[in-house]
Length: 207
Image (cartoon, rainbow, N blue to C red; front, top):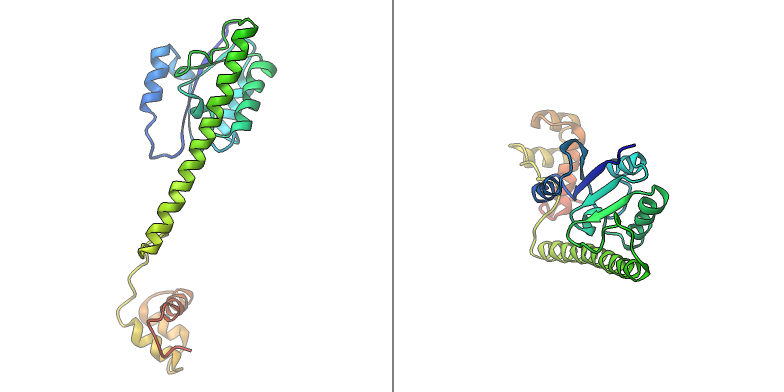
């Protein structure tokens, strides 16, 4: 039975570009139809394409990744999946950016020990970098909020005449339905907008 070489390419979001990884796969000689591209976070291995690839592996097959963080960014799970691929599925792994992490060839005891140390070190670095990215994102968001930057969907401008209608509704001069229809929006949208405006302090008279 002929062994198959697969390329596993991963980026965290649809906006990120996988071109460099794809080029590395082609240079290594992975057939186009055997390159799997997944656009999901490396925080864990609950990724459908990855899981399907592992189930496909037969003894002697090879998985090629550009770097260890493309495989994943969770220290313990990287080590666990490494064992699943190499021991349970009896396939090989090639990490292009780290030649020591190439299990295609048999190693003596010293070579195996060095590879295990390198794997643990790079797995640790991958998770640490992910945690640093999350911390920088949280700090950036906090700093932006402190400057008044708002996150989430952009608010729509209030309809013309909204404030007069809000006052009339609050003064029980008109019903909620009538106020919303006059603005051309659903009742719940009108009520939510009115409550938001009042909550933010733009209507001192609101109770």
